[in-house]
Image (cartoon, each protein chain N blue to C red):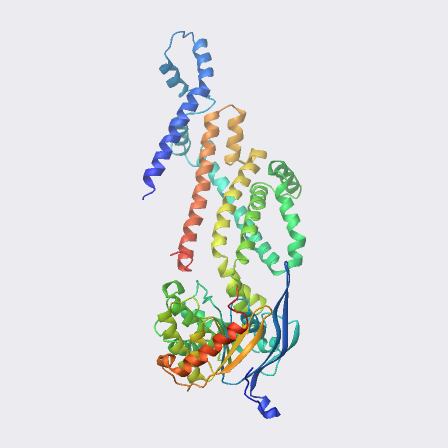
Length: 272
Length: 288
């Protein structure tokens, strides 16, 4: 386990956007209890881009949902911005991007992006302004009046990212957002996401299946393994904030990717 | 337009079957009629043609029904109590009023059921039970009870129409409110939206397809309720009253004419709602 030593003074502690200590989550299914998460310890600082990678069933989505207060842990502590996940959710501390765009088909793209703003009670003028900014942020200006069915999968997912950011949360939780898209679109969206992160300085938690994607995007990679879901390894990447797609060919990149793969193997991710 | 050929083919086949059935069913009666008229020698062709023109057949031939319909709609003044237009309007009034109340009640009930699991569990058995009582037995009771409260004429029949139409609407709308995808519901949770916000912004629009489908069923059910109510209390007219009068006096062609009129009314109502549905759902991007 590699972890940068954190100074535990109170001032430094404020930098930890997310603190997870000894977190456990057990599902009681019809086939018996399933230990989705077991003894997770993790501290995430403001402005980081943390990827969670692992095979299906390793708990990475469950961990993200627990942070989002969409699942309830059965043990351990979890704090978001110094609050409980429930309080953080009520305070609208994060935006969530799902695997599917989950846009409402009866609303235009602009109305979809405005949805959280309507719920949170922003006045009309500010809503329009934020929607326009959001569309520009994800390069969808001019598509505001279109309906979701008129957009491609990649564009819909971009709209969903704009929606998650429209109310300016500090935290962005993304659950395999590009999983359903082809590689060319994925590359483009990876770059856009990186540019967005650099520009807005948000803290991003990113769940993915793809090793190159995780290594390319993150400041830290959390490798998880299944049965029970636990953290196998935490790897610091050291790439500069602005990085072209070419770095995926460099030796440094491949070394980190190898470490990730090694971690996955050690966690029995490749076992049958 | 590509439906024209298949529909026409089925229509022609249906008509052919009908004529054949009419000939078969009316033959015994027609043979007796010939015997009574002293006609002893006749070909099968004569028998068949005659069986399609009887005054009180067992099964009227399609052209007889069409002729009767023409006689009772176009050839009779609209205000005449012997014409079908007068009675159709009565039935239509009862149906529309009953349907409006039934729809309002049905949607309201669905909202209540959706909003509270306790209400759901406590009300659903009663709602289901209300539909299991045969309406033909319930209708006269409802009419008598309402008459006691001086509610007469059109109103009791509208009540029965509403009674039959609210159930499919309730069931359909509850399903519609629950049709929101789990991911979309999770999204609402991440915004910590209130229950009424989730209802107004997600569940209600998502239920639009179910709304129009259940309205169509409800409209047809309301018409059935109105006609059944009229059969049980036929003094106030309506298509059900004409059905009853026809059966009372043995005028089978009249019965069938009233039946066709009711069917046409129902088809028109359902068709109008379907058309409105298509327009709205296209605007809401449920249909392309």
